[in-house]
Length: 132
Image (cartoon, rainbow, N blue to C red):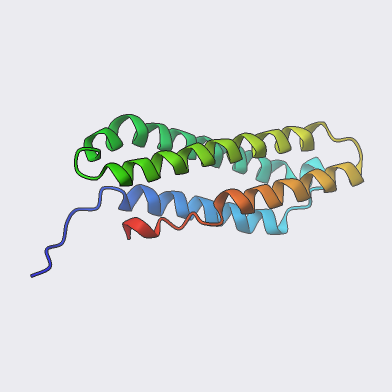
């Protein structure tokens, strides 16, 4: 008989996916040429970055140490993923700063495109399929 086991990642990952997908939709319709057109989505992206950083920190410090004795490779995979996420998050934060200081429509639109592509790169594989 295939025994069901408790998935402690399920609820938090559902919540993170929800916010991530909603933010992606908002990015699709944002007008990055003006502060009024993109200011709220920029704030949303910054909040999402914070959520992911806090979540990774919690996993790294509280969850993964308990899992390591049972599946060290899974822990190594998570840690590697968190390192890549942190790097991409930093790049996205830098792009947001670039958008905030951009002067003029053309510069803001270029910075907005950079934000769009970095967001897409950061979250493209973020489906949490391992932990259904």
